[in-house]
Image 1 (tube, helix red, strand yellow):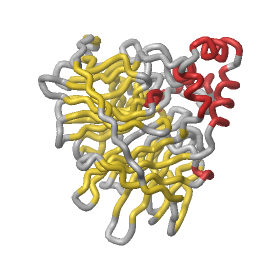
Image 2 (cartoon, rainbow, N blue to C red):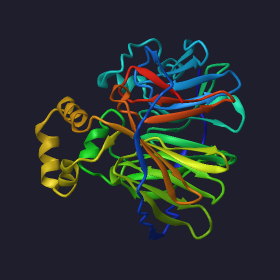
Image 3 (cartoon, rainbow, N blue to C red):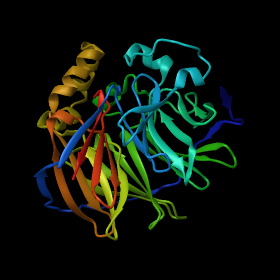
Length: 365
């Protein structure tokens, strides 16, 4: 069942105007990850984002074949499957995760709950836009469709609305690599207001913004600007400022905040480390155009996957502006795009999502 909230329209409102830069020099602890116990949850096509439901002790993830899957943590088995195209009223169609099927099946990326309401999930979809799903009734409510938002990527839900990233106004998740290669800086951070149903622009001109988090301590947004290889901070006070929080050695993806021993830590997955060729390509637009015009999209995807074989997890203390750890992840679980940390009195477990793998990996430590 599918509803479209009215009115839906976009108000362009550039709020952030001043730019400051922060350059942090760091020498992080760098080591290969050591797991006490490793496990895989297989049969999942591209589990990009992971969301923990503590009420049901389950993990929800969006997949390349247009599904949101709920997995029981204890049994590691699938509990529920929500098919986006069916909830949108498209009927039963073939969704195999291919580029061809993605336009009609969708690509759920960022997932979030609102506070402690665990039967409603908010979704940033790289094809369809921004919507909410009631997990009990399987009713989908479209909040901002793809006429408004070309490429919704990640989101964070606050009391009065949703902050979310639009990676590009030109590409969507089906052809995202074209914008990455051409270094198109038309990404935005947007805000959807629950009361007015209006979507406004908080910041634009960004180079493929991806993961987003809200820092309540400073009333600011932390955003992974993937193609610029950095984390930026956008303050939300009356004099909104934009600053570079951290320069990175690679391309950040779905960042997440966690609390640990009175520390507020930002987990930054880096699926790919920048190579010399990446810097070379960024400075030569004519080579960018040549690659895009002469190679097929599948060839570009293959070339991209061959550039870097290692994934990393960088853990950053936002209260002290220091990097705690820089962890090399086992190649078999690369490239990681998401890290979910679940703690208990007995152990800690990291679950790793990936846009391209067919499983969720876990590491108990």
